[in-house]
Image (cartoon, rainbow, N blue to C red; front, side, top):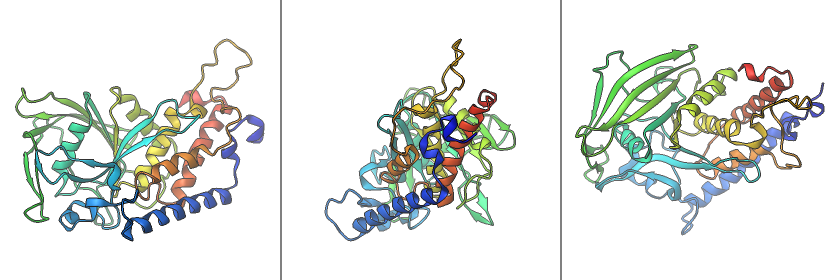
Length: 349
């Protein structure tokens, strides 16, 4: 039975050559934005602002990956440098998104930025549960991809302290002064199908009267190598489902890989697609015998939903969904869901 005969969304029936053409167009559009950002255009929407200041060199893991000034995350400092390499990301596609998706896409913390990272997590997540999705190994081919910024032991006494006055190597002006000392306390950890580890921690001020303790759900997916697509579809879907389920408080989901663009963007695109769009909203079959399937494409929707999502991501952080293979992977994952549904096995996932 063909895809069209089983009511797949039309954009999942496109040949791969067309997907590559769309990815190339998205890349060319971004290239023009970055040329504008670097040629001194006044008040450019694509300005990189303070991210290119010399004092922030040590706060950028890579010299070619920086946030746009207009939507960069600013650290909650009392005084000093508020820069961190992170971007607010909102995904909201007309006629498709059932609710806007809110994320923070950021680079993997370094030895110079891990304390600022935790301050960001605490202050950007106003409600109790903080969900962090890490989609990179710590080390690949002998090179650090992310600093080990969280307690990983099995001892509940395993704790990290975050000092309020953080001096970075960028010179005398590269200091971030926060309101209070914080502590990060290990609680528990579990491994799921040898694909990812969920570590639960508590994060909050060491002085109890200054602020509340917040629960951290840290997902460490270590099966996705840099500059690649995931090797399998189902594990990344399970990661999305599990992390989405624990984000009960509506905080932005904090997503990072190493640079915070390729794998992070791919995960965010897939996460929003699967959980917050009409084409992938699971329907209850009920008692109607005519209701055969759990997924139904929106009638007369003529745009390419995945292209729309990725274009929105690229407009908010450079190189999101960095590779052609990552872009095509999202279509393959979406197609798999419809295939499982048409074979009446979607509810077994």
